[in-house]
Every structure is written in C-alpha cells, then in structure tokens.
Amino acid sequence: MSAAPLAVVVPCFNEAARLPLLLADLAAAPAGLLAELLVVDGGSRDGTPQLARLGGAQVIHSHASRGWQLQRGVAATTAPWLLLLHADSRLQPGWSEALQRAMAAPEAAWAFDLAVQGPGLPLRLLELAVRLRSQLRQLPYGDQGLLVPRALLERGGGIPPLPLMEDLLLVQRLQRLAPIRRLGCPLQVNGRRWQRQGVLATAWRNARLRHAWRRGMSPQQLADRYYGSAGAKPLRSPQCG
Image (cartoon, rainbow, N blue to C red):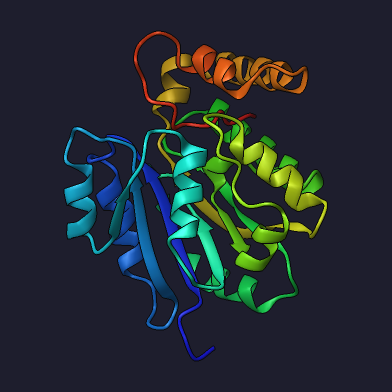
C-alpha cells in the first residue's frame, strides 16, 4: 500500500491514568502502518484530552456513550482499515505484525485474544473461555479490540450509537457478512473490575444483561442497570466469560 492503511479510534472518559500507556504502545507502530489516531472524549474531567494530544492523538469531543463516540470517531477518519480499542487496553509484542498479516488476508474482521491484567486462576480461566468463544462462535466483545475493513463496517451499517451492547450488535451484524477471526495476539485489559467484583459475579451479571437485551430491554435501561446510580458514564461494555 502506498498510504498508511490504519486508523485507530479510542473512546475515552476519565482515562488519564491509562490512556498514555496505550498511546505509547501505538507510538511504536512501524512506519507506514498508522495513518490516523483519534481519541473521542466523552467529557473527561481529569485531563484526558490534553494527555491524548501530548501522546500524538487528534481529539474530538462527544457525550459519553461508547457507541456514539465510536461512530463519531469512525466518521472523522478516512483510512481503509479501522482498529477500535478501549482506552485501558495495552498492546502486546507482535501486535503490529499480527495486524499487517490480517490486513493482507481475505476480507474478515479480526479481534485480539483477551488478556486480563492480574494474577489468579479465575482470570486465566476467563481468558480461556473468551478465546474459545471467539474461536468457536466468532463472537469477540469490545474489550478485545476490533480490526475491521471500513468497507465491511459500512456494509454492516456502521457502529450502533448505543450506550451499551454496541459491540455485541456490531459483531452480530458483521457475522452475517464475513468471518470474524482471532489475530492470535493478546490485548491486555485492566483487571480492576474483575478483581473488585469477582469473576463469577461479574460474568453472571453480564449474562443477565445480555439476556435482558435479547428479550427487548432498551439499551438505555440496560445502561442504567449496568452503571447503577453512582453517576458513572456509560462507556464500558460488559465482557463475558
């Protein structure tokens, strides 16, 4: 390719402690890979937008809804491939080579293998369960990142502008159009949620949310139930084990 093929879109809300680490990972991309790096901030109050700019990202602003932020970010980029990442994720050695192999393969969407930061057998079993789900059901979730050709994303209707379940709906749309494959490279995510609430309790709560969504509960009701009354912004899509 004569032009860099990849645009990276990262939705954020109050991720000043973690976003710079992801931006440092992206800064190590080989020349000719990364065309655009866009952070879509949802009203952070901790200096996230300023740190994003210092890390080399273009910043645009939005209300805090992960699906809406991703939709805005994708619309603001032009590269033929899109990499959608959560702000608290960390790219691991070999990530750029895995992306380049995927972009040279027949049309498909791709996701990383989940790696949860922290020790303990429950987290390792969670990672194994997610890997099996991604391999056998072709059903990755947003915490795993998503590499997708822009043309395929557009055929699938783009990013659903939902406060919750946007990743699951997007993957279900893409499944009808092309394979969803594993990149064979891990993406590390922050383990604070799993460690605070427990792996089984978190997986059970998320399964109940997905069940309620399939039975017709509105995305806003789901977001209210997920984030509770603590005033948290609707950014994190639930991961499952």
